[in-house]
Structure formats: structure tokens, C-alpha cells
Length: 163
Image 1 (cartoon, rainbow, N blue to C red):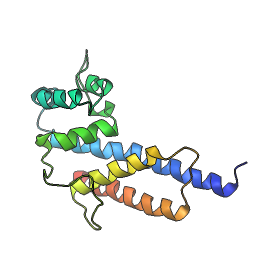
Image 2 (image 1 turned 120 degrees about the vertical axis):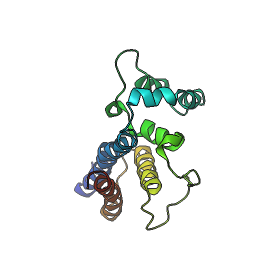
Image 3 (image 1 turned 90 degrees about the vertical axis):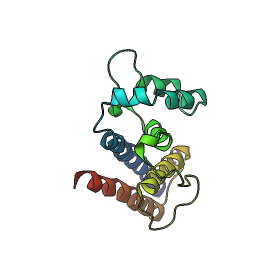
């Protein structure tokens, strides 16, 4: 039988997942929309088809994700893209202008608020939280620290786009 405390701690996990997936996905979609604002998404994806085919061949992106980029009918829209697909596009397509020397798989430097670090944070938290078992709980102190970090990324980028 679950105690109130363990139930509360599981709620923290679900709140972090919702923040990361809902708002984090919106943030990275907005980055793509912003970087492609001067070109239709269909045209952009046609220009990047060779690189995206390579990502598909290497199984970096799945067939389902590939089909979202190049639908059988209609036009693609970033609102259909999941956080994983968007992050893979941002990391692999030169058009987005991310620092090619940025190291994506190392611990983040405290205070690094670059676009690359923000994307890395979202990716890191998303991966960490999705791997956590649904029966696992997160203590309040850990929840508060992670919430503040994820919320900081989300609100920081929204300010960069809209203000």
C-alpha cells in the first residue's frame, strides 16, 4: 500500500515529465519554427533530404518520425514532431547554426545558458525522466531543483523568441 509521501513523490515525477514533454517540446519546436521562418518547412526539408535520409539509414530517426517529415499527403508541420525528432534535427542539420564543437554528452557547465546548453538540458532531463520507472518516486528537493532548471530553460527561450 502506498503512503501519502510516496504518492506525493510519484506525483513529482509526473509533473516533471509533463513539464519536460509538454513545454520542452514546444520550446524546441519553436526553435525550428524560428530558424525556418524565412522558408516553408516543406522546402527546408526537401533541401535537407540527403542528411535526413542518412539519419534514417543509421536508425537515428524511426520510420514513423521520417513519415512525419515527409508525409504521403499534405504538408509536414512541426506541431506533429515529438521532442526526440526535433532535437535530432537541431543537432544534425547545419541550417540551425548550432555550435558544431559543442559537446553534447558531457555534464553541463553551471551557468551555461547558451542555446546548445538549453537543448542539452531538455534532452538530458527528458531521457532521465523517461527511463525512470513509473513506480519510482522523486523526492521533493530533487523535484524542486529539476523543476527550476527545466522551467528556466522553457521560460528563457520563450523570452528570447517573443520579447
